[in-house]
Image (cartoon, rainbow, N blue to C red):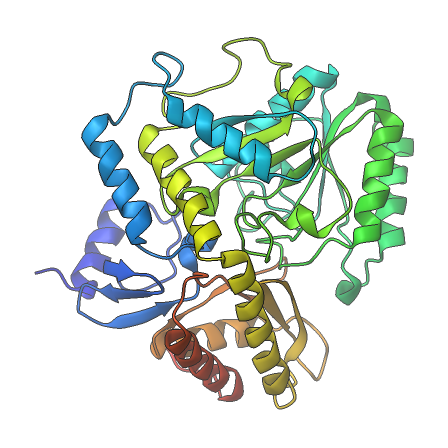
Amino acid sequence: MSNNQTLRQRQAAATPRGVGVMAPFFIERALNAELWDVEGRRFIDFAGGIAVLNTGHCHPTVSAAVQKQLAAFTHSCYQVVPYESYIALAERINALTPGTHAKKTAFFSSGAEAVENAIKIARAATARSAVIAFTGGFHGRTMMGMALTGKVTPYKVGFGPFPGEVYHAPFPQELHGVSIEQSLQRLNELFKADVDPQRVAAIIFEPVQGEGGFYIAPPEWLRALRQLCDQHGILLIADEIQTGFARTGQWFAMQHYDVLPDLMTLAKSLAGGYPLSAVCGRAEIMDAPSPGGLGGTYAGNPLAIAAAHAVLDVIETEQLNQRANQLGDRLQARLQIIASAVPHIAQIRGLGAMVAIELIDPATGEPDVAKTKAIQAHALAQGLILLSCGTYANVIRFLFPLTIEDTVFAEALDILEAALKGNADVAT
């Protein structure tokens, strides 16, 4: 029987170091918000496969749907022999996403694929090539995804040159001295100094930055983006890959705003752990590419499509939007109490259950990466899996399943409090 030490040795010999791995142990089984490693140790999962498991590990409704599809057929390639479930899921996504305008949806396999195809669609629809993204944004590890991503380490180091005509403006972050006005001013400076707005196909943004640190887009900033796009004929793309499917207390984070995007990218919790992504947008824009211009061998795989139908059912029947708000409120209330005793906590922020804390050195006000790592290690040693993020790697984000049991959630919060209040120097 394999143990963690043996598997780590095999891992080092057989897999490249470029695939960074956080946990020093290996999963054997999981259920809802808990998982067990190959040595039988139990962990509470506040990472959720990086926002993939809003409906938890092995939800019985999702598993049953996949098993049923598995008995029928596993692959035909939708572009060769199509199937009704793909169309039905597109209809459901079109109805759920914000706005009553006519929409269409295409399915792919990964979030990066969704982003790549959203850019392709925007370029085809506008006959323009330039794209604007934002500092701190994360849009994938493909070449275009990296070009759009606003964080160098570890995503872009050593991989250039990247596709051209991608420009960045600062995302508003009051904590780091970037106001809404400064962000918008930089956009206007781009139009004056770097790129003619008539050459810009799209502006892409995350309504809540994921890898960037869970910074929430201010409503007035989004209104200004929409106005700029309308003024110059630019498409507005909302990257909802991490924010979608009840994480923020709405089906989609854009439902917190009075702004409609032209295109949306979706993935992660869409299919509860099965590889599926989507681009949804205005029908006339989605129809811009010629037949054959979109797709992929595994795009819209029938097993993943079946899982996605089940995920949507679970979100609705188990009222996970409401559950996200309840859990997020409980977490933020507990963190506020903890923060009174932990001066390292500079800010607590979040929408629904998409919550994060930012950690600083209270003596200098500078981002405290060492403290962040130590807290994460302390929690892991006590059986709680946490993820860090942020441009400065000093943010702890919380991505627990929205189906987590109250008792397990309470246990996790106790571990979290001990990690934040303690010396947080336990090594794993």
